[in-house]
Length: 147
Image (cartoon, rainbow, N blue to C red; front, side):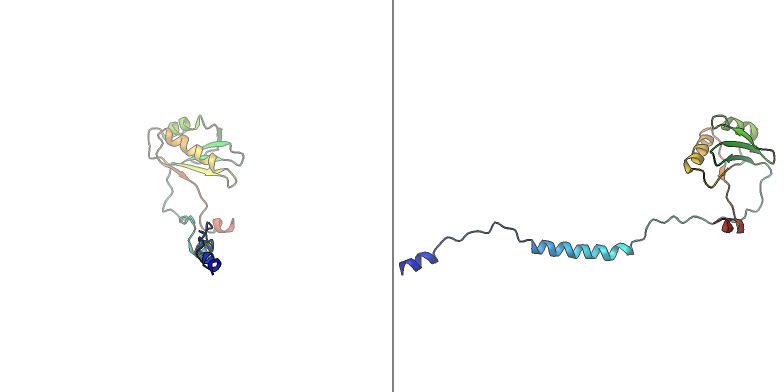
């Protein structure tokens, strides 16, 4: 009997292991929640404005043409475009504006030109103090046909 009594009074060992089952269950529930909710999140789509026809084109327009090879051409009204450099462009535009800062400058760029090249031209003009700088786009049926 003494042997049985001593066996029942033995020390209880503490369990040093962490039970991972509840942790795994919580992780699987979170995974399922994220998998279900991910398609419902709207992505950051850019909603570009549509281009309509303007009421009237200005009489005096300065055009800067960025060709497919990123070469610049300066064109005043309906004259022939003449080659120029990014460095000389602000001076030519100021001379063509002849003190009238309301004269618009329109940048026409080829579809295959890098965005960076167009931004450099805009930055060069705006840093020279030229206020009215815009971009030329195709509008109406011609824009739909070219897509």
